[in-house]
Image (tube, rainbow, N blue to C red):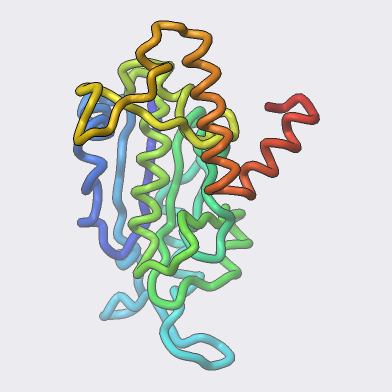
Length: 235
């Protein structure tokens, strides 16, 4: 069973976009996953296909209507697939989420626009609210692209080597160690000698130390989680 993604958006022409290139694009052409972008406006109301309205309580902007979104979701036939709502107020996207979703039948991704969408449809349809960064974007489409790229690269047969997904950032709760390649000296900068030593144990220790240092200094919140998991045997 391949991974099937349905994106509900007001701008279906944004897809597949970058997902049609590189690893994800080749996997899409090879049938390792499938993508359907559906226009929410097909379920809009009246002659002008209205999809939004003014917010109760006042305020600027417009809000996507729950009846329109519910109709779009029903037409997408989610089945057993999780339904994600891309929104700045969602839970931060994590590699653990990505691993779980990539192991399933696929996703339905609802892309917000304007001032967002009516909370009632989010709750009534059991959507998972997800944010890809601590910044406000023009809509959820870029977030959907991020989520799908992260999931697709973990699908069997997409990446050349399975170890590529093991020794990367977040795989063990740590940021990845720095990487080097030829030439061994560039603009007076040399590769750390341990990487040229041929001592695999020493290289492994160095990489672990570098990963821990990067995580501790750049992402202290991840470091604290890693320390907690280490104490409980989860890391």
